[in-house]
Image (cartoon, rainbow, N blue to C red; front, top):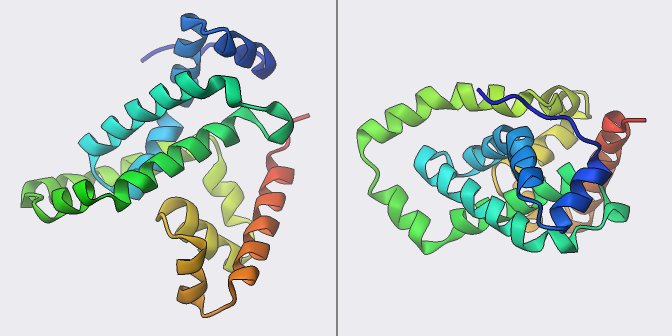
Length: 183
């Protein structure tokens, strides 16, 4: 198990923008488990989740220059890249074909792994923070961020206007941001 190196976020970002490989290794060590948990929760397939995670880190490396700290924290940016990549893969024809052809043994292994992945995601305390939100926010966050639903799909699921979904998600994100704010 690798030892996590602590480095101020601003310094890490600057090193990453300068394409420093050691900084990238630090980023990977500190965030890979949380990002893997997000991917796995969406695709529910270990080998595919590992492939997507690799794709995510390649995207991070190539697009680091576009990260803007004034728009949010590094972790938020990483989660968005991860989530969007996993959802894109999940919705792809390739994934649907793979899911249809999955062996029974693979399904059993995925069920067994699901509990260990939840532990990986929760090591950052996000699950606990989400559980403190209003119940309707919790449901929406689960559908949008963990199950890969679109805003439109959530609106149909709850039979509410799209604007209401967007307003509630924004309110949930604002509450989480306040709870996770580190001074």
